[in-house]
Length: 305
Image 1: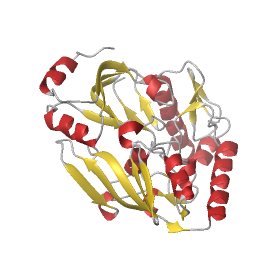
Image 2: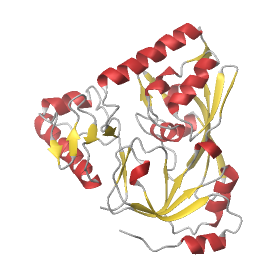
Image 3: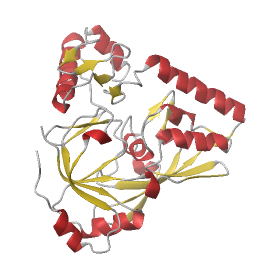
């Protein structure tokens, strides 16, 4: 499905724009599932100033979505109307360690932030070594793994509003809950400041090896997947509920519940966005029927069917 091309109008209204503005750009290559339609507009800002310039001049009735490395995302097959903003490592990927703190752009990979902290003997951020996303997603979803969460280490996050105003949020103002934050979803996060504690480098490295070994032995990291599909309900593990409902290995079209870890869905090769989302909803229905518990999506889904 192609959308009306509004790129020429946007460019004429933004003569000083420095980032890339592309019309009807395929999004499947930008997601780990490798599925989905096109973005009406895909915008990659050059830097924060360029992002501010763009948002201040973008008509208020144009929808805006922000995506990172696409590791926790289903794009529906009909594509996404409006603007997809994708921050690049070139403009938003810098990482700097200072004392017991690390400042990172939101396009920086979680794993790279963990590595930068380790190189500076800063402990407490090792859990990021096991999260296959970027810092922007970590802020939005309070990403966590192996006993740590973003809320445990974040000092503040900066971003830009839909109207192009720069804003800063303290840890408390992020309103973190399990796998989510309470900040307006239209905010485009641009950087974050984290604080750990000075730690013996051997202990940090040992912890990172432990985190990596867990990923490699317990998760289908070499498949086309989207990470953990559903949130763990209070007092339960999502994968155990899915397994108990007999859904391990279950398929819909080219999508399958992972045999290795039941809370991961995989694209076996020719899945559509519809296949993957339908599989997820089927899993939710079977778990509800079997246990009475309603699983909640952790993976984000955007676009039209």
